[in-house]
Image (tube, rainbow, N blue to C red; front, side, top):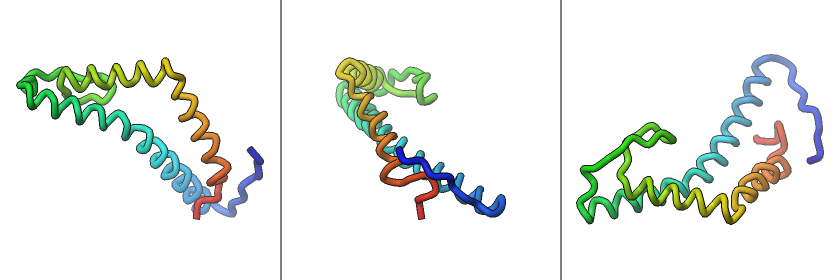
Length: 107
């Protein structure tokens, strides 16, 4: 990553820079979390069809109640995600984001 120092004149410009970087990080995080939401939703729909929607447990990762099958789908997906080394693509996407949108480059 070609690093270039970001210049700012006052605290207001610095706050704007921090806000832009936070928004960029939130967008990347929501994009990666969307995959887990898909499996959670499919598990909820399946539980509704087979009658397990009344049986819910507390999911410690999201701090909400979710059904048994949705938790099972999410844990299987995360296991397959890690076993197949797909988490390296998330790390690569974070590194590529600095080349696509360098620090201070979001307009």
